[in-house]
Image (cartoon, rainbow, N blue to C red):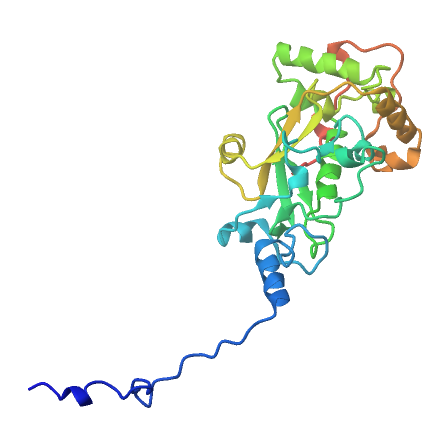
Length: 302
């Protein structure tokens, strides 16, 4: 039986009946367009995001390498330490035959590298990193001077420079094949020449690790390479990176003058004073008479 048409539905002008427990629809209050615009800016830009490579001791933890491996942390390198990019001009330019005071950022070519030296080398920060490379057989250890800050970009380059200026042990040189010895000998002669791209006689008579670099003495950045680390070390060690060594470049006239000015200041090279030998004589030694350390004088390098 259908209801009478006069009583069907709700009376005109009255809303439908609602259950008492049902909440009324929210009231729409007009917002401030300025607040909406500011919120949109924060979400679409990096204005509120912390730079993972910001300087300071209060930006994230500092991990030991073994702890980083246990927790499975993905270690990222500071872009400053990356190989020179093709799409931008901001990178470090440094001939590793010279002290790091000759390193500069391409955006600030008129002065030695300052901006970014104290920035963390990795994210998350670590207390110790290892560096290996294809041109030489050694491993370079870089330890943070301040464990609360972790390894910095400046400490990485300083460690590479100091290690390259170290002496070569006789047991490291003698087993090399004749072809490799000849290459090192040619590099040895050039590095002690008067060429503007060579350090010159200040290197002394002793064979240095930098003589292993040959013409590939340009800093090419650090890269993660598990395959090369395993090949070189026998296992994939945490916080271990490959140093890329690129062919060197000829200095411009301005770079030659600036480099000479820095080299004339002895205070810039105090960190290498322990690793220098006596000045080289005018007579160049033969490949067999290159001065190398004996096995008994070999330091226990890690």
